[in-house]
Length: 209
Image: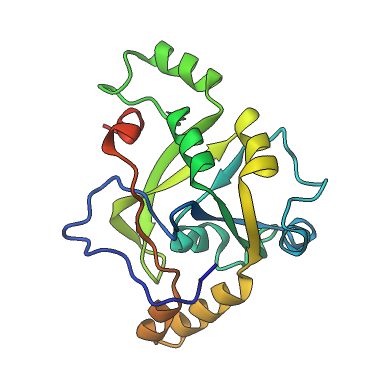
């Protein structure tokens, strides 16, 4: 996986509110998670999650590197000290998207709250859209997708979709150091090259208004 590549987010003036942006190839997409070292280092070493990883819990994957930095505090938060770049198949990612339910009730998108609750209970994946972040982890006007996997989706993620797992904690620290030192251009040059992910609008129609 190429992580230290020049890249930046799209012009916020023209950036649509809801769009998936990610480092991706013709067949894979890279998502980010952060774990305690006991899980994260083992996963990066073996290319799969260790037995301690809980398959029966919701696991959230994030295509946005900077949103992951916001969530884990550049790898400084307790229990999130190891930042992983998990390369998974696009087939798997899109399987989850097609079966996902929005994590909150949205009037005009869902028939009613009871219908949404039934969909949410049955769905093996859920989506929430949170403000994308800039280099200083301040919120931007457009949104970043978070994909939560549970049940069948979490098992497929762990057992079928993973192509590779890399420890990108050093990258997180390097970017953060440049930000702290007032060197945004150097920080930006290290960011993964996240481009619009080519999923049809129809595939996301059930996930936002």
